[in-house]
Image 1 (tube, helix red, strand yellow):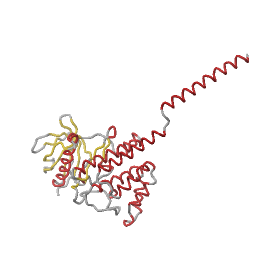
Image 2 (cartoon, rainbow, N blue to C red; image 1 turned 90 degrees about the vertical axis):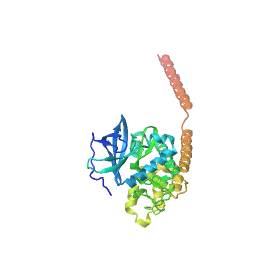
Image 3 (cartoon, helix red, strand yellow; image 1 turned 120 degrees about the vertical axis):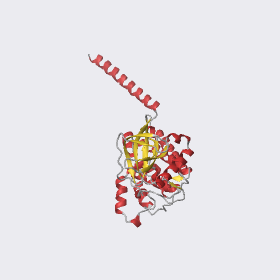
Image 4 (cartoon, helix red, strand yellow; image 1 turned 180 degrees about the vertical axis):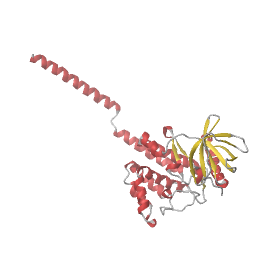
Length: 312
């Protein structure tokens, strides 16, 4: 297998597609994983994320998943796969690559910290919808984790790094232990939609109680890792209280796919929003109260003036 560990591309380097001749100007390294490196590149005044694969077969699997996803969603044609080609790198070796439109944004924890926790339900819903599109196309994301999600303006969410994308029915290609249901003795590593949803539920715990989750993974012996341990942490997180039942279903694999899970989440979030609104003082009542207070103050002022006149 070809390794990319020594592959260095610097700002100003130009990558030229061997077969299509497209030229990409390198800006900087965005990230790297076990099966490739991702660079921010520009072409014709547009920004792209370009992934160079260490293994052509693994990279082709990602490309197939992205093609399937674009085929399910017309708008995805503007978000996902843009170009596929080979190139000769500075080390003289030939590598395969693909490009996607670059999405500028923040990781989920940073987005919530910057914009407020009230954005969490919408971000989660959009994540589930993205997973649902992938599931309907016959794939799972596989390596769902905080690092592989970007949140942009207005709660828009993109999944990035499809290195773990796996055809449903196959063995999961790539995963991170803490999000893996096999790690928690709660299922196999066979690719099915429930695998992604288990990871998503664990990700929710990770967002609000990273230390408790880390502590549990360090202190529990392997045979004691379980859904019960995860739910025990969930019960300590006020932000997840409205979604406890949903999370329990996700941990147990009771949703058909991401679309069904997203609809269930949407209904919960809608009911919670309606409940919060009903508990708030209506705007008209606030105005009426303000007018009443102002009137009382005016009356009190006049009375004091009259009293002052009588005392003179």
